[in-house]
Length: 117
Image 1 (cartoon, rainbow, N blue to C red):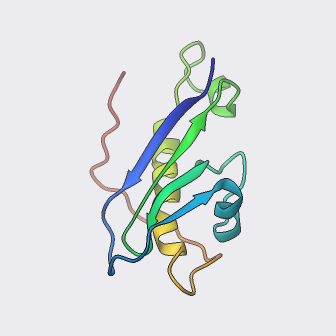
Image 2 (cartoon, rainbow, N blue to C red; image 1 turned 90 degrees about the vertical axis):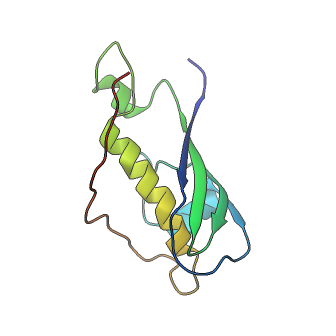
C-alpha cells in the first residue's frame, strides 16, 4: 500500500486575517506538543493565524492503529480523525503571537457524526 493523503481543514476561527503560513513537520513540532506516533499532521499547507488552518496527514500501511482497529479492513479510527482535526485547528491558535509552544485541549465535541464506509 502506498501513501494515502488524509486531508483536514478547519474553517471557523476568530480574529483578523493575517499572512498565510505554511509549515512542514519539523516546523509544526517546534510550535505544538504532540509527537509521533500521536502527531497527525505531516504538513500545514495554509494557516491564517487566529482564523483557519489546512493540512494533511499521510496514512501509511504500517500506521500503528491499522493493526488494532478493524483487522483486515484498515481504517483510521474516528476519534483519531477528530484528533487530527483538533491538531490542525490548534495551529491557527499556536501561530498567533505569544502562543508558540502552549497547550490546547479539546473540552467538548458536539454533533459529530462519523459515517460508515
